[in-house]
Length: 521
Image 1 (cartoon, rainbow, N blue to C red):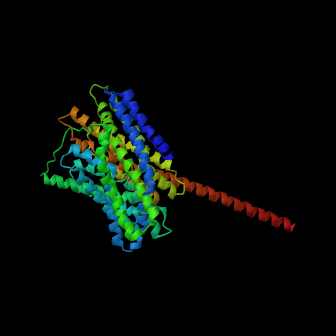
Image 2 (cartoon, rainbow, N blue to C red):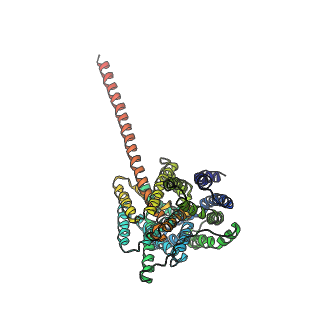
Image 3 (cartoon, helix red, strand yellow):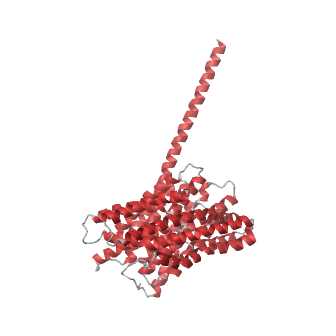
């Protein structure tokens, strides 16, 4: 019941904002849409609750056990190989990536759903292997991030423009509700097993490194499609994410997809258990049974998104650009976009998981609500920037490049812990709920802009994607600024404590001097 209560409270801001927009500001024409939205919201809450309950019993223990057991293999390359395999498997299970792949296929036929998911997952797997190697080799995390993003921005020069924002979107979508807890647990397991004196600075950072692989993978996929079609991309200038049918029909249609996404994690863990881990049978059985609520939670969660959320995001994106609406509605769209970004961040399971991990590893010195509010403010600004990009038609790199430069420069003034945490935060904010609501929102805005100016408008692929790219970069800045403030306050407290201690010593010495004088008298 505690988890259900927390889920309801965390998702209330999003529900309130959506209802204000769809009931007061721009009401639905069809009354049935309100029931659709209500059912979708209830399904998301129930599904998320089941998922989080099962997570603690299955995915998180598997990640920690695998991480702690990998070191027993005592071979760097075998450990890296297992990291690649598990990274691939858990990313294939990521609902946010599946949502993004479906949205992308609606816009460009040449992008297949399965190839998109598998390639992005491969990029994640390779990055997980590289992140584990960094842990074992003890490479400086700041230098690693500088190198990786230097490669990314060098590749930008050769990638088709339409795939730049999409690749960054894929990066955010690969690190969501399933992959984040597993990969974090994997990294913690390896780090804690390697050395009991390993600092928290080394524990975080694995998600940040993991986020780079999918960018490179989708860049290469975009180059392949571009060259295969002789430089011509077949785009669909209409975008309609509405899933027709009854709730139960959509639920039935998702049964196999969710099973294919989730159960590979269990199937890969079984031989690991038989030959390496060898847990007691009762504990192994508890882990297997723990995957059941994870499955049903994801099934209900994704069905609620498909049935009741995607159409609402597209509706909000389009209705504020309706020529029949007053001009000030565009400004109102920016304000609503900010609060939607904040609300969705507070509702994301992956953000909750990261906050819990951080509070636990810092022994409560950094509260999970502090990091969640910081991320929410950053994501609110990110959504506004994304909407501004679409409305103005400015190329995405004119936004992303300065933001990443700021994030990389801030590393010089931030501790390793907060640098790693910042890049991890950038990876976890683009979960399934974010992809399912905000991607249709921005694609709906892009389609409305294209319809208003058909001769000069950019394609929906070029202009509509990129929301998760903004969502992935703004936390890098927000969390590092939080780290600088936190370090500054800590130093002031330490100086104050040192001054108090010095004063006490001085008083004691003065007291000793007085005692000596009395003794002489």
